[in-house]
Length: 159
Image 1 (cartoon, rainbow, N blue to C red):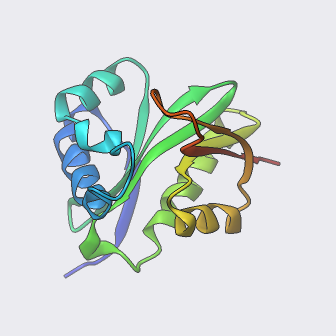
Image 2: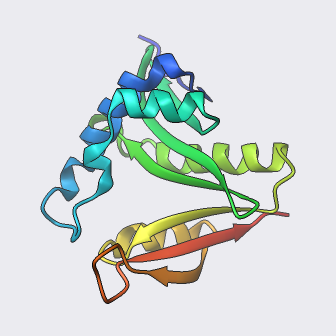
């Protein structure tokens, strides 16, 4: 069996697999984040609609099945990525790093100056991962209804 991982741009037909991947990857955070992650409200229909309206996604496939993904969109002149997801069974293969590198390459291809993301304050391991890849905090924000910051906005300047 060929275990090669292939990264490619997603199409609207990938939306059901992307939604399932996000749901499975974020399940470990259910009940642990306040407010609850918006990832639990993602649907195949919503993702297909976003993709058809100009948002992007990169999927990682192994043996023809989607095992990871990242959603992308333009934000403040940079490429923003969110919903970075790797199926639990595919973790430990470096897929998160490969997906982030693919997002950065997409931004470079488009001639954009940087890449942005948001990470929950409650997830220090994720913050450390992004810091180790060159992302730096640029601001903090509160989810609607919260008086204190709940997430950190990070940016990496591309050369």
